[in-house]
Length: 400
Image (cartoon, rainbow, N blue to C red; front, side, top):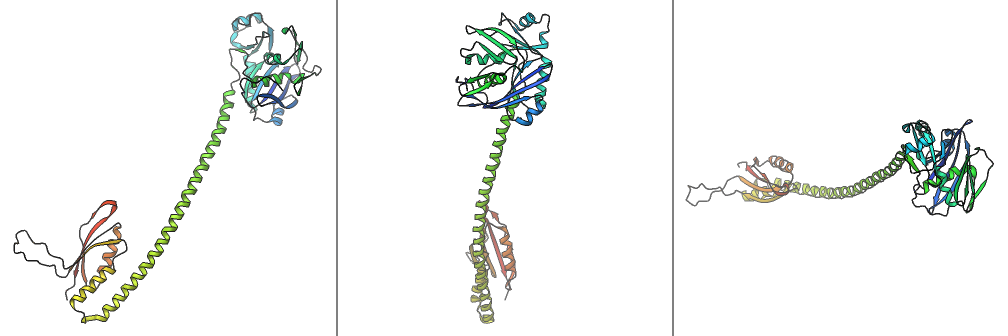
């Protein structure tokens, strides 16, 4: 475990991979680094693999990959002027090389230039992408070893296959290549032990736990870091979308519950209204029976009163009566100055209002079926405020 506090925690967990290629083929070493309280922990160490397929089958593709490339194809050379231009640095070690065909990284202490052909680098990154792995950082050769220098303590050398580095007086002195299968050495970092064969992977993990980046030339690598972070954001957006859907369903349920309660209340009121209508029908039947009993012995005045009762009893529940006039006064013409009052004989004038037009038609049908009604005339009506319709009916009675 590293005591040094991280300046910028980039990822909570990262799969650190060393890709090494030599005359025997490809060797892949890996470990999972995890952070806890801003310290780096080694969570898992894996045996050597000879193909990415085997690594993916055991580890999966969920973790971001921090990649270190060593061995065949990577040239490491010390340089005297690390601040020189890319072309000058490249030509100092590969005279005449095309700067556009190569890319490289350089560290300041020690000053080592690491160079690789661009097509080789893109081929390796494409292999990771083909297996569904997202490479978020890529380091060439010795660049990641610079991360180990602050925690070496008093050690005068560091062996991290395929490299061996020696120091004198706290400064870099020599870089040598060693076999990838060199004898295993163990180093202790606080309570954790790590073998020399995993130091490259360990240093690659450190690079993702702190704000570290070597000076890179030309090609910024890797191209899939943005893709990985977009995938992470997509996951969060998916969770947010599911939360919105759940919230919508909850709102729909609450609205449905409220609507169901309102519907139950309306059904109760409807049941009560049906009871009132039944009582109304009973009273109408009683009136009809009394009318038959009276027969021809009822005087005209009583008959008119009976007619008025029948009309009143036939009024639908949704109609409010505003005027009921037996034999209304006729309007006199402007030329008539006699002052005589005339009545419209055999006529009943009814004025009322309702919010339902169909109730008027239903009532007219009932009135027309009454034996003493000759004609029911609906005068032109108008709609008022809040959809209230005011209407006027004139009932012409049959002559005696």
